[in-house]
Length: 393
Image 1 (cartoon, rainbow, N blue to C red):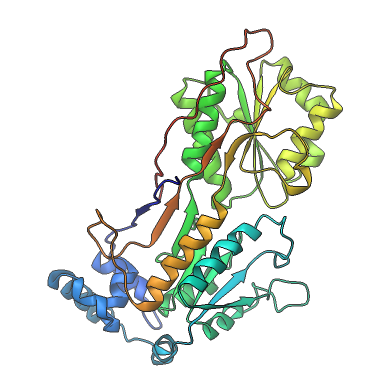
Image 2: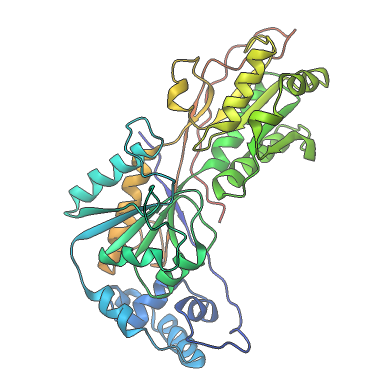
């Protein structure tokens, strides 16, 4: 049975911006009132779930709005009031996924099934595809307003474009953790906990020097994996100095057989690669090992923080974790439908209606690419530990 996703909320109280010009935004009202942007939308928009908000919270929101001189955008309110039973899906990838082997395909399966179960049709926005307008073009995301709400997919998204949607109160959910803009709802995989477990499993096999290979990219999915990797090293009492992370904008060029042999000579016995859309880190690592004439897991252990590229599915299954992509897609639709309906109801055990974040646990995959360090006895393969999803932001 999959683990229940854990939700977390970002809160804070900050002073009103000094010397601001232009129309104040809902995000600023939320910061001044010390509540989420969803709560501001419920209070100022007169939505039915607003009755579940305490009178004190309601008054704080109204006071903050008055202090900032906030006036709702009438055009945005008219758009938000229209309902077509349509949910949008906007991809920021170079081409919209159509191949069943594409890493985004399982996400879309979950999205489609959950949308159908809830009585919604889907509108696919393909501005990122060849010949499209492009997601980074000015006001490109305005097309999403044709739907009642929109799901967004991709490692990189135009923050300012997203901020306009969020500030206007348009229902939008990003599939994958995002720090910006503030107030954006998102559904993501718990890469931190999953990556930490992979490192702990390597440590239990006897590895004492482990290196992470990753692309030079600040996408949240990459930074989360690195965070979990470093936490796993610290939990196992292993060194977490800067040279345990190898970052490269072009792993295929920089991760050579010679570099791999140098690491082994320095005492490194295990390598961990991140999963990305291109699979560049894992491809480069396995290619370098093969060209160096190294046997895995006899000469070194390899682990992958995610799933291998589909075209490498015939190779030995890598140790790592599986991302519940279909479940993530379904969770994103559930959250978006809640925002579209104007309901921000808490789950059992939750005590606040402003919860905008869903984090889903990943399942550890033992695989066949890890073993004890060279020259050590072969212990029994450790069992996967039981984890619960944990949020980091």
